[in-house]
Image (cartoon, rainbow, N blue to C red; front, side):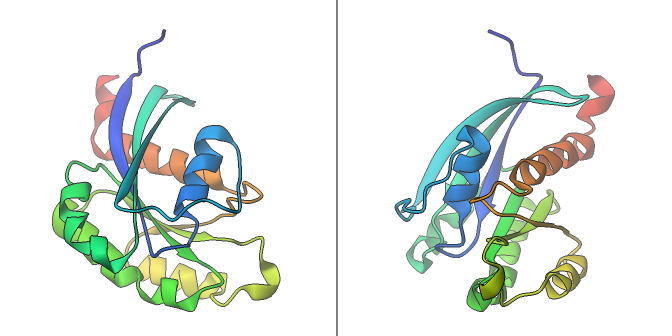
Length: 178
């Protein structure tokens, strides 16, 4: 068994039913199911994968339940996270409007660790309520990269996780020691 070059924890944040769990399972198993159960509390999954030019990476992915009743546990869940994907549903304006709260929670606990904005469900073209330009402006305002994804069709899912991993590696200066 090959040793991972780097291991770190990331969190997936956002309102309920934006597709966080679907994104994770698409990334880990390259599978999609339309009927995942809503995450209660936190679900922790891992994936080891080869990251071009960086070796074998081990990710511990914390899928945080988005319900209001788990808000008090966020601090505990976010502790030790090296970065996060903040996910909203392109077809659900409320999930977009609550992004500030998720970003603030993360930054209060983790400071300036890398955050990526993920607009999910781009495959539902006729139902999109937040256009890419509006999402891009929000991302720029919050000093984040925007990645538009579809867990269903796998569009940009791997890219989101890979880019976050690369930024974490670069930010932590681990590349200079590799």
